Length: 168
Image (tube, rainbow, N blue to C red; front, top):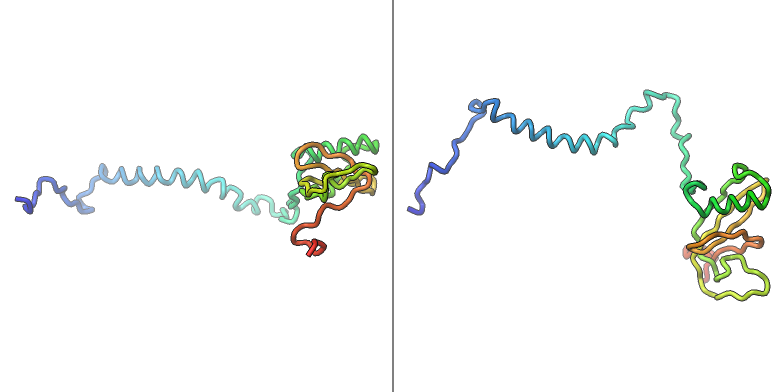
């Protein structure tokens, strides 16, 4: 009895000729349901394709490649620009951001030591913002968090590990 075939539990085998519209609809519905997520994922990726036809004069080199933050994106840079504009009596639009870098300062003076003061001799993470106005450059130094301040006599940060002037 154990090895007897039980045909009542085995479904009937259908051939393509036996399939009716009712049997084909779930497969088509499944394809549509699966295609929707692909459309949602690929649609935005392909949206820019073919834009050359709309603007044949577009030049890829016109696209800015700078990763430097704009003043609106970085409050540190915005504060430095505002201070320099006030300090030099110029409009903020006349100031150019030359660089904005994360650096490691050689000591706790943040690369801007004041005469007669002592500083902890520890490497200190920070930032350096270099601005240009009226043909001159100005440096603002700060720690990893907190404000940047104008540095009248700036010193260079500690060399990068891969730099040639690093101690051997």
